[in-house]
Length: 258
Ligand SMILES: [Fe+2]
Image 1: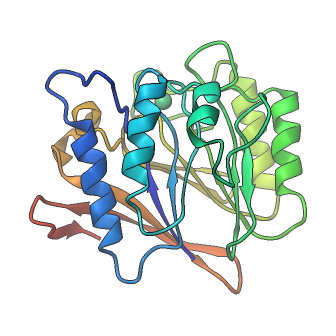
Image 2 (image 1 turned 90 degrees about the vertical axis):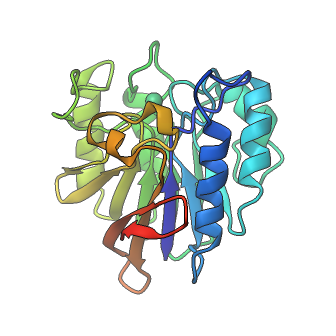
């Protein structure tokens, strides 16, 4: 199984002056569509919209629908779950009701678990006991799973404020759950706009830098406005993570890093 990951597209309506975020996402989608073989799934790990507004999700959906493979979007701190439900609610993966925007995909070699870390009071991650119980329930059953969520639950030393959860004990508990679940192959996150790897126990945590070229930070600034995405590889028989390629393409479509 192969999953292409994009994140932090921050689509803004009206557009941010000097930014070309619709173009950035459209180019990324075209690059993924050109893969042979295609990935099994595209996962967007949040901050799809810059202000969580309905008009922004209309753009996100229109662009994502150009993908030739199944795709899902989970919430980031800039998103608004109720507007995501309005925009994506007719799609089979979008959760009903008005609770956290969690969902599980069972139709792939690995179970895909989307965990909403954005139900707290601020822009940092939130994983209280109720939320951890929800994640544990989604991981139940023992089959190998890959977890997607917006906030990284480890100290990201490369950024000025390395602890991106409101309460750090929640991040530690979340990392402990992921490390001890026995069936988590890998975790993918966004949020920090940089390409970083961490871990929870022996479980790799892979952070995709943002697809909005104007918001890239730290070393990711060197990407300029190139297309970039992560391509995660899993062994179907064993359900284990086999590595993640950070794919960067220039404007001519030439792959620079793979
Ligand atoms: Fe974020």
